Structures are given as structure tokens and as C-alpha cells.
Length: 359
Image (tube, rainbow, N blue to C red; front, side, top):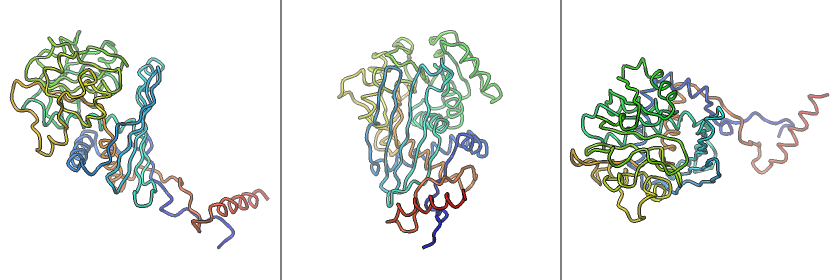
């Protein structure tokens, strides 16, 4: 054994996708292709739903927001996401949601990917919304209302165009500046954009209604008289206890579809309903085991809170794209002694090398 520390082996190096690399990767592939690809990966994993370890996310709540861990495994690969939700952050010039995630090899526990997930979560949330709508929205839907025009808005718009064929978008936000931002960002996409003065105006003529607001409170963004027969509601803003967007009567008129009931009953719109209220799990719809949209008058509601399997799918996709794009860094993140029993010796040899270099 030599008297100097050896270079890290490839097994000790972990691919890391920074924010800058994630943006490069998205541009290299194309944002709408990424959204479409993510929907494919999510659908693939939902079709093998029963293989996954599933648990509601582990949440630490505070008066200002929530910090969560979202773990899962398919038996071969383990993944988790760290994510926060702090609605007050926007007023302080900070993101409401930030995140990072990791994949690891179950056979030895070694991480195989570390990635930013603030951008990736926005992409996968939009891909999941549009994927659900592909099964639940009215056939041939072309118009969507977007109520809440913050950080998620443009991703939702592009995902629904790419995956569902939406062409017309009707925007509303209590902050007119947010609507102007969204229309400016989407102005060159070829979508037909309309800024609305009220949520009632926004939903007029819309076949799909997406609610995406950030305030941590029981809110009523959609009242019962705003929702006509035959629409699909994509409710993605209610995602923690005490935070909802829809009037309870809207829920009672809708067929409700969820990712993982045990989590959605704690965090979603259905926290307003009895624990035994009927919901349908989306994986069953994707696999053909349960019906999605059945008729033209049916109101379908995707009570979306985000689930760990979706993040697993997104990380799996990014890992598969790294050899094709090269947009990542190798991190020397794992100790790699020549003798796995001699971690102390590795540390001491590094100290000896430092002393020699100083001399």
C-alpha cells in the first residue's frame, strides 16, 4: 500500500446536475420534448406502481411554510427529494419552492445521481398534470384557464399544449404583474393568450381549469357556480394540511382522481371530505383497471399534491440523459479507501500529504 492517498475510483464519483447544468440540459433537448419525455417516464413508473415502496412524505411544518422529504424505491434504485414550500418567500425575492434530489443503487447503497430539483420539480409537476389530463379531460379540449400565474404557470401551459393539444390560455392572478409576466414569457409560443380580470372571467369557455395558487390557507379559488358540467379541474395548489383551493361543493360534484390516497387525504383538496369518500388512484386509470372520463357531462378533478414516484421518474430521466448531453459534474462525494476497512488510514495519509506539501 502506498504512502499517499489514491485518486477516487469512478464508483466514488457521483454525477451532479447543478442549476446551470439543468438549464443547459433542458435547452439541449428542448423544453417541450423534456415535458413530453417526463410524462412517458412517469407513466412507465405508474404502470409498475405496485413495485414501489410508498409512504406519505415526511413533513416538518412551521408558521411560514413546510420542509419535506419524499422517499421511494422500486427495489433496485432508491430515490428521495428534499423540497420546501414557503409562500412568503416571493415577497422577499426568494423562490416559494426549492428542491434537490438523489438516486442510489439499492444493492450497495451508493448514490448514483445528485441533482437540483427546483427546475426539475416544475417540469415534472407540469408533465404529471398534462399526463392526468390526457386520460381525464374532455376529448379535443383546446382552452384552459390558469388561475395563479406564478412560477409553475408557463410550464403547465407548455405541457398542456405538448401533451393535450391546448391552444388557448385564459390567465388570472390577484397580482396583475404575475399575469403580465406569464403572457410575456409565452408571447412567442404561438399560443392564444387572454388576460382576465376575475377568476369567473378566466373559466368562461374553458374545458380545463388549472388552479395553482401559493397561499397557505383554506381558500376558495373555485366556487360551485364557477364549474360547469364536462370540465376537467387540475388542482395543484392545495398541497399541505390547511391549504386548499376549491369549495367543498365542487368536490362533491366531481369524480376525484389522486396519486396516493394516504397522502392526498392529508394534504389535498379531499382533506375537506370524510376519510371514506371515494377517490380513484391514477395508476389504475393508466393501467386500464379503472375508468377515467366516461361521458361529456362528467366533472373530473385531479387532486394533485405530488408524489415521490413522480420525482423518482424525473430523476431517472435526467440520469438517462446525462450520457447524451454531458451536462453534469462528477463530485468526489464518497470516501474510497484502498482497504474499505481502513478509513482512518485514508484520513491519516491525506494529513501526511498535506504536511509534505507545506514543507
